[in-house]
Length: 527
Image (cartoon, rainbow, N blue to C red; front, side):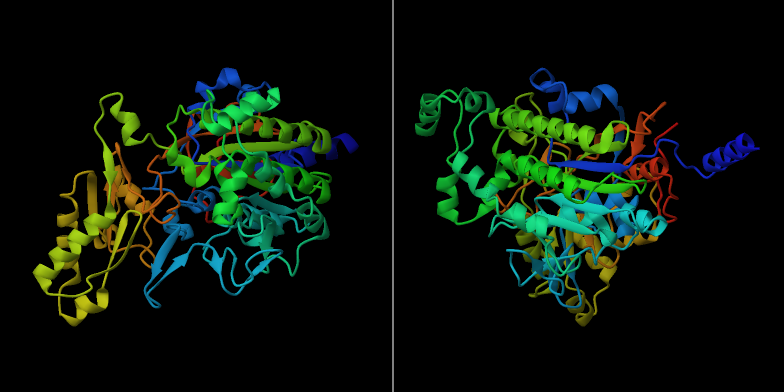
């Protein structure tokens, strides 16, 4: 009788989709602005227990984001909701709020201020996210599941954890400490405060940055040579730069940012007891690839090589901690890439491919002059952002112009610029259902409430020009397809070779043995 009951229970669990080896902890890793080919280019420079272990022991699928462009936070929202931007609402890093006439950041909040040693005048929250996230599905099925999110940039962290995260932690550039917001708690946990007291930021600032191989050689002469510019490699005096600009932001442009994320994650796993019981937990980690300095180096630069090697060590250290504290076979890792790096025009020129930098600033200046000639003087363009132009609807209505005709004029004018491949008026995105091509990518990234009135896409060999090195509004990636790696508990059998990025959420739900969100559009990667 007992055997019969066990067989029935097992059958019921199987039918319900519960995994026999469901993980105690799921670790979601996104690496921002990474060039996925680096894993092949530098494979021989990588150790056996980091990226190579995940690629060797895990499963790989090529995922398609299936929308026009990605910016900070957009990809994380898509991964952890299983929905496209048109549905989850995070259509850009910022968008124009037409009622107030001001830009709205995808996570910035005046209501929920930062906690910790940060900027108390503002904070961040997932209030603009319009969908259930993976963390929400976990909490709805088991209140004892824990959800944490860590990274340097608040947008990535907040949108990875979603509205049900126990805590989201990001780096404050002013204090050099880890902070959160009142959306999650009234104050930081004691262990985070103690962690901040270790002054890790100051340690890395004083350390400076040179290649790992030379740093480990502990050669003072090599450091001095590189510092004065006569070495064969590079050396960056981070302390000097920090004094000049008076901000810890400088650390984001170094591999130490990833090391700091890993340090905090290791402490969090222990302090929060992640993966220690039968209630599956979630930890999302967001790494970066030299952040705002990403365009300053070619893809084969020594700085990038060093960043990849150091990140590999961080990944190896993380996996080692997971093995020891959570247990082999008791955790699952999903690793993929957000806002993936594209080749720059100067890199493409080496293989005789003609590209360039498209300046939306110059294009809009000419567009404004053109509209003034056609319709008379007026502020016809109220804002513009990544891939979109916002028109002055009130002025158009006041002049009794057909809004559709103005959109068409703007689209016809914009498409003539060199580097522009496709321009669509917004009305065509709301009245048609595109099944492929650039039109579908635009439609998947379009929100009738938040997006612009005209959408444009650049040709493959063209990238947007930035206002300055730290420009976040016009920095984006057109690269849609990136690899996804699944590693650890439950990753058995075959995995589809190609998928959509929205398939990650139902895959993880299946591994955890919880229902997939009814809003999700994806399907499990497991065959």
